[in-house]
Image (cartoon, rainbow, N blue to C red):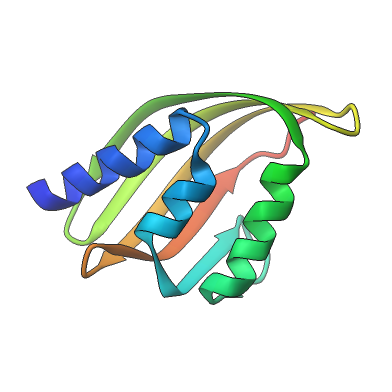
Length: 118
């Protein structure tokens, strides 16, 4: 589990530093499945890359804070606070938990749990 803790630490550090897209390229498997709350999952790195690029490209300013994280047998969980100012003028404050499943040092499944807020 210590290897997974190190990977989770590196991944979260990039996100906090505003480098979520670099984290995606480094730590996510080609067969990644990502899911927002109860929305249908998005399968594959190419489709998720497009989604991630569109989301982060729409943000004018972001304050991201990691509240804590934990690892288990092939899984990790991180709790976040996001304060996002979008280019279209929207502002969002959001608490989120990211649940990740890992295989061979890469994230193969990630689900985001949050309450949409304005």
